[in-house]
Image (cartoon, rainbow, N blue to C red; front, side):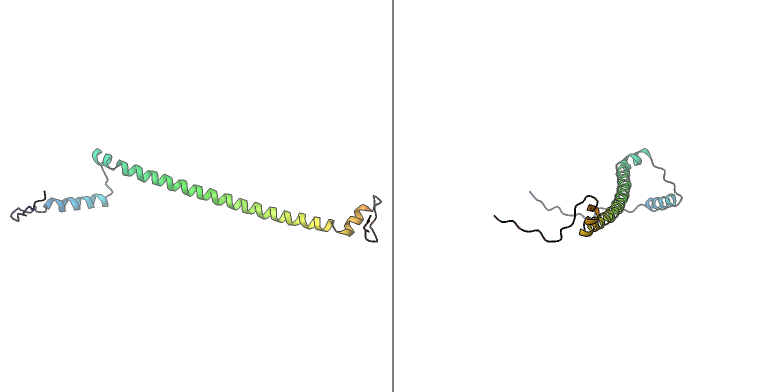
Length: 125
């Protein structure tokens, strides 16, 4: 079961190595000099992360291209919609003006059909 293990304080604590400070300054110097030489082990250990970053970059580029394409399509459709609306208004005004009684009477003069002067009467049986 569970046991209490006494902590022995006589164990020597590991001293921080002096080499760690030297390693840190060497790393900073290599970074400042843009010296990023990697061993094969370091490269293979970082490979999954690099593939992940590469896929994120590709996804970001694809997403920006898709968004631009969508914006272009939207703008094109808005322009087409404005054009069709103006055409609709023009055709509607032409139909309204041509369907007036006076315009119809002018068009039918040549055929011999005349306007009624008195209103139509209802025939009852």
